Image (cartoon, rainbow, N blue to C red; front, side, top):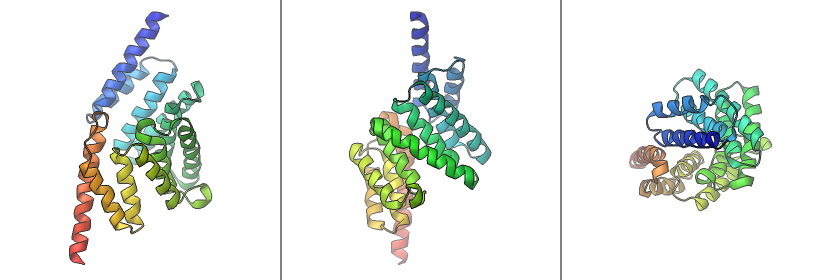
Amino acid sequence: MTTKRNSLRFLVEQADELYSARHELARVEKSVELLRSVGRNSFEIDWRLARAYFFLGQESGSIGEKRAIHAAGVKAGRAAVKESADRVEGNFWLGVNLALLAQVQSKPFAILHAVQAKRALAKAVEIDRGYHGAGPLRVLARLQQHLPLMLGGGSERAIKNYEEAIRIDPTNTVTRIYLAELLLKMNRVEEAQEQLESILLTTPLPNWKFESERDQARAKAMLATLDRRTSAA
C-alpha cells in the first residue's frame, strides 16, 4: 500500500512539473498521457486531468477540438467532484471546463452547461475563493459577464467579483485583463487603462509566467489601440 501511495505521489508531482512548463504544449499533452496511464479514478489524478484538458482546449484553434477536449475535462472534473465534493480543485476545474464548453455549443446545450458551470464555480467560491489566484471569483465573473440577468449574470455582478478577486490577488494578470475587456465594452476607458497599466507593472510570479507574459503583450496592444483612438479623435 505504501508503494502504491508513493508511486501515485511521484506521478502527480511529475504531472505538476509538466504542467508548470505549459508554454510548451507538448508538456501538457505528456501530462495527460501520464495521468491517464494510472487507469483508475483518483481525486488527485482526475482534477489534474481536468486542469490539463482546460489548457489544451483553451489553446486549440479548432472549435471541434475545443468541444471534445473540454467535454473530456468536464468528465474528469465530475469524477473529481464525485470523489471529493468538498475540495475546491474538482469544483473549480469542472466549472472552468463547463464554461468553456458552453462557448462552443449550440444555444440549448450552451445554456445548460453555463448554468452548471455557475453552480460549480459558486461551490468553489464557497470552499476557497483564493484558490488559483482567486480563480473561482475570476471565472465566475467571466461567466457572469456573458450570462443574462435572469440566469444570474450581468456586468455589475461580474465587476464586483473581478474586484474582489483583485483584492485577494492583485498580481493576477488574467483577472485584470478580463476586467479591462469588460470595462472597455462598457466604455469605461480610463478604468480599463488603469487595469492595463497595472498589468504592465506586474512582476510575473513563477507559476504564472506563461499567463503574465501573454497578458502583458495583450495589454500593450490594447493600450496602443486606445492611444491611436485618442490621437485620431
